[in-house]
Image (cartoon, rainbow, N blue to C red; front, side, top):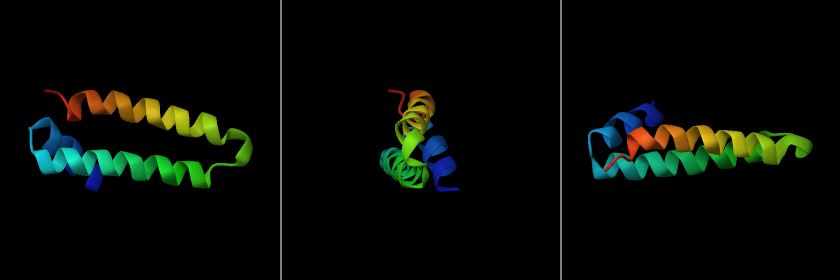
Length: 62
């Protein structure tokens, strides 16, 4: 729910929602890094970062 609120609020230009979106993404990547097996940790985190960056195009548009 936090991610959805951050995405929509960021799209609408709310500065607080944009900060929430950034913190949500950082937290998500940290959780993926810690939960992924050691052999695929970098790949899983990198793929998640790519997907989050693509979603950020909409959330953080100027």
